Length: 307
Image 1 (cartoon, helix red, strand yellow):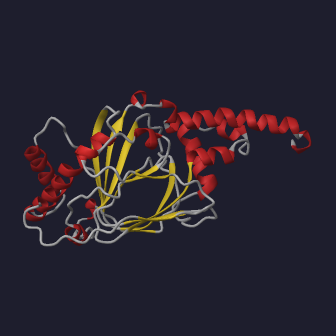
Image 2: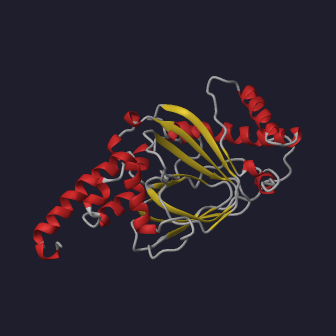
Image 3: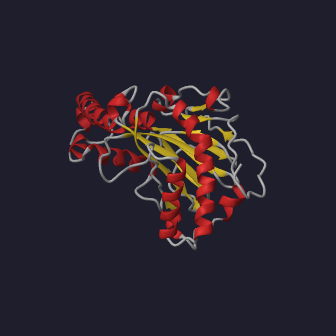
């Protein structure tokens, strides 16, 4: 229990509305209620599923997080503390509090935020490390996502530069309101549909990260202002305190509405994945090669279509 907490909102369960025109890649792990009952989800995670934990209860003061004024402290809208495994909890708390004070928070508010944050870490990290027990973690980053989002574009996560590391990503809704996600095609579905349709000369000019971006924009538009497209969607309402796991580089998603969340984003070297071929850069390279073969085969079968 966090000192000084006043109320705990009643926890609502995640609700899913599945589109029959999409694969159902949601996996419920109702058996996991704590670290003691947890087991690995790495196989499901690397296979690009969204894994939910309907019976995992985290003690969170949702009212506190809902009241955090990120207009007054804009740097908190997306803030990523790095956890140092060799430091004590008190030292982590001290460093984080000092960092928040350095961003303009008064000491009392900074201390309260650290108390609540450390309480969540104390409860969730043992579960996190167990469900990802096959991984050897490197950088241990936790991202506070305290910015209000409405109808962002559908996308798989992309980066300006190729990122060789893998990550294990867990979300928790901190807010007193639901976090509404739309999800669409997984990357393997996108690759299958796009095979042979993109001229190989276009892909040859791109690095693997740009190939990923090309697939993304081909399905969902060029930029974040294109918040709607013709692709089918599942809808997920993640209630206060709901926890879920997904590789956001492999499942297309759109935050339709959300205000306060936290993600645990520990990084893993590609060679320590159970299946390194499932790394996004490896998938991009395989697509580039297979797309050329499929495109050449199509042209050989239909020479009249070749200019």
